[in-house]
Length: 304
Image (cartoon, rainbow, N blue to C red; front, top):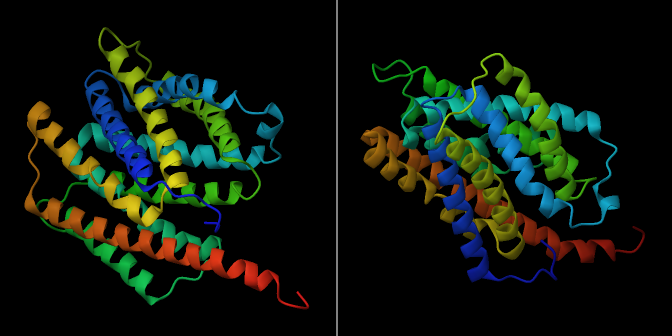
């Protein structure tokens, strides 16, 4: 983060809390929609109404800034993103909400590994320890080989891994394109890609199901926009713990509305994953500040 960045911690925290509530509401609407609609259809409608919500925001910027030369990379990124979305939505619809959301929080662990492999980032011992801790949290929740093991948890884990791949691709795209460009082309690709599997199971939403799929699109887009604003105004290490509010929120709704219970192991594993995430976010923020501080000095070195 540049030295000239102006921080507004209270506003940033407000944006992050609002973003977290939006993502939690999206998960709840997806769960409600899954009672009558196939996961493929839910994903399509989430993307369609998400596109309609984001267009007014994106079209307020200079059209020239939305041009890109990376259409092939967007196609690959969005294709992987659709698989991640389908797996994640299936998990929300078929697993206890708290368990599905807990496993989705493991994505930063995989991002750290993939950043080393594909972005050439240097990760030191303490962050590797946080990654190992995150894996332990995942194993505590999934518990492979035990009588409580569910194959559905592997689908939730697949969604987290693919989400990490998408995050790396977004980092690569952001080296060339602006954030608004990435958001616009993501939705422009998501809608036609996601309608293909939806056509094989197509059934028009009935009654209140329309409210759930529209809500999924609006809450998902709102969460993304608010999250972006939060990170512009505050530091990721301070804001990441706020996003963990989503877990008790969906757990409470799962208990009240769907009669779900969450075993102690899921809470323990979730706590371990969240602690791992918090430390990874803290280290990334420290390194970013250090880079911003040393970059002007390095640029002024003679002979460079």
